[in-house]
Amino acid sequence: MRRHIFQIVTSGVMAVAALWPVVTGADPAHGLSLYGAPALAPDMVLPYANPDAPKGGRMVQGNTDGFDSLNPFILKGTAPWQLAALTHEGLMLRSADEPFTLYCLLCESVDVATDNLSVTFTLRDTARFADGTPVTVADVIWSFQTLGTQGHPRFRALHDQTAEIAQTGPRSVTLRFTRPDRELPLIAGLRPILQQAQWQGRDFAAADPTQVVIGSGPYVVAEHEAGRQVTLRRNPDYWGAALPLRRGMANLDEVQIAFFGDGGVMFEAFKAGQVTVYRETNAEDWDRLYDFPAMAEGRMVKSDIAHRRPTGMTGYVMNTRRPPFDDWRVREAMIAAFNFPYVNGTVTGGKQPRIRSYFDNSGLSDVTTPATGAVRDLLLPHAATLLPGALDGYSLPAGDVSERNRADLRRAADLLTEAGYPVQDGRRMTPDGRPMQIAALVRQGDTGNQDILNLYRAALDRLGIALTLRPVDNAQYAERERNLDFDLAPFRRDLSLSPGNEQRLYWGAALAATPGTRNLMGAVDPAIDAMIDAMLRAATPDDFRASIEALDRVLITGRYVIPIWAGGPDRIAHDARLKYPATTPIYGDRFGWLPDVWWMDTP
Image (cartoon, rainbow, N blue to C red; front, side, top):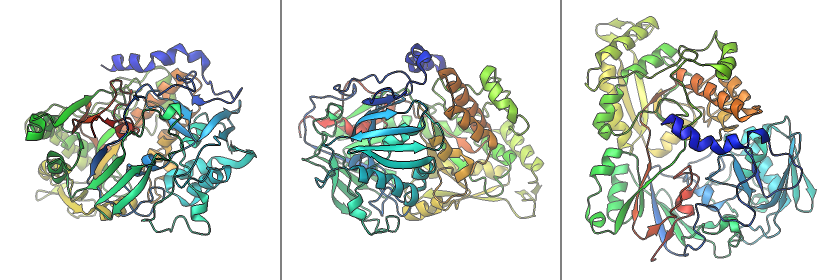
């Protein structure tokens, strides 16, 4: 399977290997690609959109996370995760069918310098915010500077690598970077553009989080009820409706995001027709729970969406900033104690394969065999500090379909004792003589993870470890995660076929201790940073793949996360009137595919 996926994803890459890098800046272009030229001409429609899709209708998506903010660009508060993509735009738009390609959206052209030290965007004179005012160079400059200094920490990396941003023409803006980096122009192209006038004389970071932030996207916030729902309506005067790049997109008149106390309540709302789309992550539930009347009568249908993206990482992250998880042997013991075959069989009927590494299911991963060639060359300078398996190959514990899992528990016990956590009177003790206790942070409505952790708790109890579940409401969960106040917590990190600077946000050392960091595990490892550096300076596709494989090895052998199962195809149950194009992108249900290119057949 791995080789088959590799051939599908990289066949086009190899054909243009001699062209790497291709963003030369010889002429302004309508798109940017790190692998050959963009596939689409300026007047072409995205291949996974239906240009003849009718407009109208309504989609209701369900969330269980709650929200207390309508500003997704600051650290304060929790906004609906769908909001920014529907209401705001960057200078460029990502193609979900090309891993390394962006196309001009708010800009009409982009020009990257031959030395990769600067990029110039020229704005479309037709680009408008939702209130009808023009998107100007001043708005772009203000957005980059404000998000980089007052926005969420995820925006700061680009700001820190930007030496200057300035107007260089009536509708042109140029960013000059502190060092050459082929990916920085693409990151800049995706940065959301906000309206400067809305925030004149106001502190952006401290603003009322319930205030609607004006954007240029196809939808605007029409109604909202704190903690319950946000309704977005298609802007009838959306400036980009006639762009070829936007044909077949934003077809629905209304997208509502409704919030529920837990996944079970949300599923019941779907069965009752109150929610019109439902993403199912459990293969066994997909087979057995969808025989309710609306499905039997054809008013609801099930769709399996194939994709070719990496698995990413799903599981339970261990906070290495505090004992006992500052010791890799304890983390390995925790992984060994998680009896995957038993838990998987109990929860999913054994129908979902385990995630084997961060970039599993792609041509960017091969962690089970000894490192060779360029991968080994990248790792060897760090051999003294690499954890076991990085060079020789690493496989997750096999586990046992029986509940006891004696072999792995014996190994886990030995590792814990070696790390200074002995057993006394049946309880595992810390080096300072206290009973070993671990608290798992979970959302109150997250019954799925609570069920899994309750199974896991029984295994840890056999090791003498007390695992306590700490269910908290959504606001408390977001605050504790933001402040890195947890021992163990559910974890999901989506990864793409075009990893880049975002890897520093996910596991780079620089932001590991920063509140709001995406490096939840607190990884501080020079080898991780070195592999990211190698990836960003890769001069050929082969160098790029080698650097990602090396990074994958360092991450999985860092034992930061207890991996669970890969999702398989994307499973979406939905109102039968909701349709999507026959051609789906390589990323499947990602990057706004739902609701971006969906439509309602008979509103």
